[in-house]
Length: 448
Image (tube, rainbow, N blue to C red):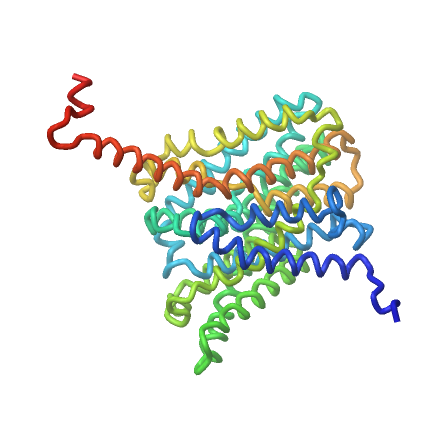
């Protein structure tokens, strides 16, 4: 009889994950509505508590002998769903309307952030070669659609212009795919040192033309065909069916992209952009926010998982030192986007005020895309079996994980901190106004 009560690790993990989602959806969603506190923060904290570093109830290490491959594939699925869903909700022909601003974000801003990140990491981890720091920098250069959606799905989105919000959404859904060349170029240099023609051939022919350009073409075809199929078959269907359709198309993009060896993130982005090109999907969905339904489940579930796999023991080993990681984090958060956006403000029409500049500069979170890129680089190195320094392979994952962990808390709580600051400021102004009563000496007169 008691044998029925026996448990194994996957069953305990399911229970912990389900319990965590129940708590988060019933409590964290309420907190988010009131304070705009992102649900990814309590999800990560819950993962830390039930993970192997604390209670050890939820341990992905026990599921498989290759945790890196599991994390890589989970990140791939989450990213493809978020990228397709985000780009599929863009306004009609939005890519064509914002091509100049998007082009600057995907070229000048990304290259500047890439160089800044690499110099910061290289300077603070002296055992790394600069070309090795470029690999880490490439992964953390792109802004993350998962964390962006978590931030902009709350009341904060009402305080910024629709043009700026759409621009940041399309940037976060597109630059993850365009981050691949930034990671692959230094990897090719490491693989084929002193063989410039081989490096140029592999980078231009394989990465740029095949993995990137062909991925955009393939995704556009998938998105157009998918929209025509749904348009034909959706007569009489409820708009909520769009949620299922988004997931199906996202999985198809991930599968086809992986099978063909192209950038599946760009396949999903191009498919979503083509899907929303005619504007029919917006009419079909109406006022229903498809992204909000998916975010509530995917963001919380993934960051519970991430909280359980955070490599705490590696943050202060391999000559990294926690203080170096903290300084890297501060320099990257302030140096990779804000300075270049200040310079480009006259050329990006969506940045109409200085507030817009600092919002766009600050809300460039590092998240699932960085996790995927770092693990993808490690898998690429492992599969090609080329001699690369052990130190680089040891620090790539912990440095990325630390930046993601800090970004979760910084960007996930930024909106709440801004609201609290605004509330305190209004209360202070109201208190000063109340002190200036008729018949009393005003504070302003005393200053004179």
